[in-house]
Image (cartoon, rainbow, N blue to C red; front, side):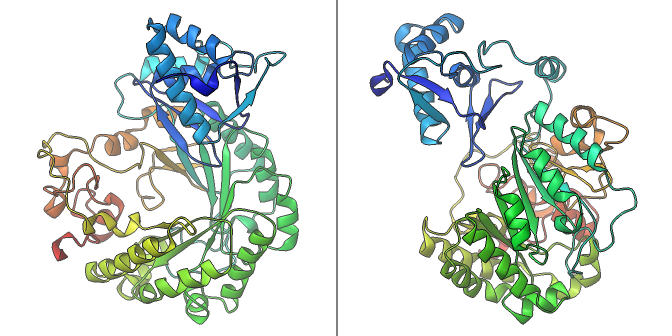
Length: 470
């Protein structure tokens, strides 16, 4: 691969892009406005050399020297990396050298002290040096009383993390190069200092988004967000009109949610919509997507995931839980809408086991000792309102640590709970999940949270999977 159009240019990694090396031969380069790119260590090195002070030819020379490559091999590796970074809108291009190098970007092989420590301690760990995403239940307070609520929110907890404690944890997540924080609740906007929290986060190199039911999302809130680096707001909508209001327990909540989407649209704020799918609303999904498309919102995605009987949802399990046949039906409708919408409106159908419509990949059988599992405790961690840490929003029975007693890094590296999820093997699974033909390329072993919620057994078969209906 030739350098071609890059000759004589000085690439400058945009200030909000995060570069993170891992303890295996891998790393990530992350643009919060687009996506993360998985790279090898050489790719990490190239990214860190894009400081605006080095030309592409200088970067090739450095890569050739550091990695003992031929000039052709170094040129090809640099060109390939730059094209990937440029396609993800991670680079600015200069025609002359910057006056000085970006702080911290100069010597790519000199990693931060925390990173070296993590690498030394965890060369054999089945996890990343930090989660890619942290979901943060910033408060248990809520202005609605939804029947499915996984945290049974309503009143604020008396021991929620204070503003200063939140700031301390945010600093640690940034130092660990966590890519994204997603603030959820309860309802984040009922916390009086939530905008201060967002303001603090927006000064850091980390992507920030938050979820809201829309009831407290006012023009004043939108005005406060104008100068903050908030990458998206997710609005939860679980039906059209009265069906949403009944589910959310408050008249007018649907209109408030739609108004929040309109405000986001008119204010140029990216928006996503999420729906908890139940047996009462799964037939509405196509009409909901049509309604949202007509609004012309700058949309990142629409996602719908099956109801899970945790939190307050346990009280309503018999009424809300879908059968596998119903999940298949709404998955089919989502698949059709995804095809219909194309790139104009992104429909996320993975939570509905959409891969079951496709043939298995026909790969060799997976051995019993092969590790399986989702991102819980591996690429994802959850922080509770009181500082408790969990592997997944639906697994509050598995407490990994307490941020008032431990650092997040200590919990991430040393929690026995996280180790359980990092070391799940195919042979641990039971029922239809154990010998699933879709392992491991399309299915990672079924949803362990769904299995646990239904049976109390982390390794039981996933009750939502409809593979047997194919």
